[in-house]
Length: 355
Image (cartoon, rainbow, N blue to C red; front, side, top):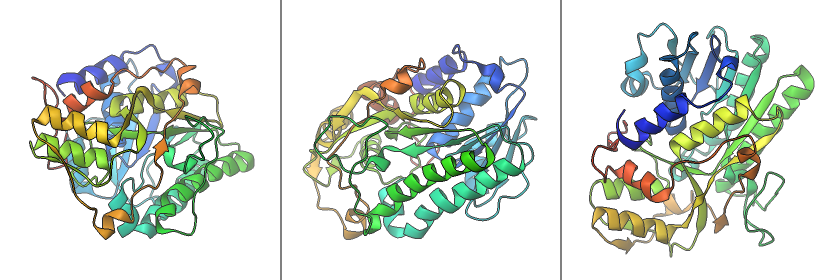
């Protein structure tokens, strides 16, 4: 790990957190090869270099080859194990799991439109399967990684969503599969707490970006970053007036840890960097400037349009999480520079999907 990304991993691994809650324990992470899962694993592995009792990590994903490519440096470590499985099916025996972080989910527009059933299943069936595993294995804490999408469309009555906000979602639409299933996943966590006493936390992430993104990611910011990394024109497929909250991947991973270690059990916490609230047009402009290219408009394909969010303003109020001590450290411009490898010595994006 090099540059800003590596520096942030090092910094966060030494942060004054109650690491004793995790040291000597096993953390099971689904979606281990995804943008969030990979970053979280790298953070825990970095912590282990200084920990008296290492944090054991069990990494789950469907694609073993991708896992070896993205997490191979940890493969032979005694406190790391990888298990290939589909969380939408019965979870195989993975051993002890003191903490479970469920980060496996379809998270970008093409997946929503091309695999709508799988999108819903991972957030509902996958969540239930992992909750069942937690109950049967005496797990102490279950972390369900949720999303800004659960708030739906801003009804025009607030500037930013706090954790109590409930916006509008047209449930009779293909695009609704992701936010509605995330909502149901949160409800399942509450049901398992009431029935089995399983403690849980819910980090609701804003749009996340960074050098651990996959090459297949079809979110607008991911497409913009890939174009900028290749020094190509940035393709904008709308007027770009949508305004969203964003979070750099290391800050998102830290937010997840703060909800687990310092959050109040049974509650949700927004994870977003207020300094990175920006419109798509502004975002495209920054990346075009960094790449020395232009912003051009191109009408979206039907397969792309069906997966797009209809929300034109979706910003999160993260003051509740900041009350635990979490603070976003990497803001938009420097985060984008890191992701595209613009500055010397940074962690340059690999377009094969590896960071």
